Length: 289
View 1 (cartoon, rainbow, N blue to C red):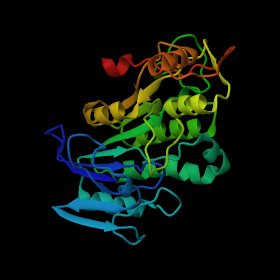
View 2: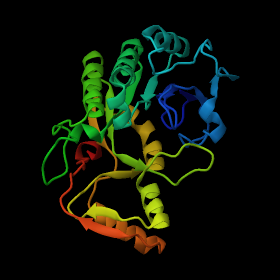
View 3: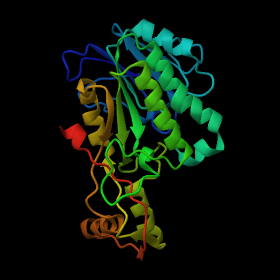
View 4: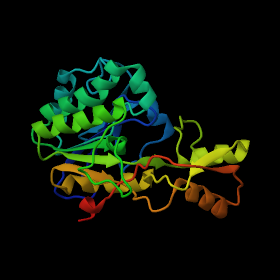
């Protein structure tokens, strides 16, 4: 979890942010500087750090007062104790088990992390502004030739079902909570830390191996630079409650993106065209307005 003092909004005195790169546990980090994720070094990925009243504490032990896990060890009392101690004005929840395959293999564990833990946060929030990350996967079963609005939800996998249930449960407890339906995100690979597959790593691996990369000119998907997401996330505390499509709108096909990658980098892909494809794109007009 991230704890921080006022960053950009003078009306928000303190924040908690949940999440950890490369995993689903909730870890505590000091948040310093104006860039939301700037204070996270690779070493912080496995250490708890919390600054309260200027005092820094670190631990990796389960009995550390602010150590919380999103697996089955996490109970409501853990989260309630943390929030009661910190007394945040805003809670930004990004932690999840987001791997669709992992959710299917362990539905009980993913349900606990993706549905119950956010519900615990909502019940314990005690008036703090809640901003929780959802997913564009809530449109994974939707059909249409236009980007999906917030009302076009249709799920096609367990992870999507959990995210949609999470939204409904939290909003039932706190109608002022904000749900950010995030797109697939990308960043450049980093040395020494886990790197999940994304658009850039997919193109780089294809360029290195020269294995066929089959993409469709008919498939559109929203893809967003993760650091832009980080920079915009804190502004979400000012939004009215509800669900929002949050990320880049797709105006070019996946095939066209691969062509653009080759043009910009000079790298060659063994690009092949495939027919059809499922669109996973969002209309972000609600957020813009």
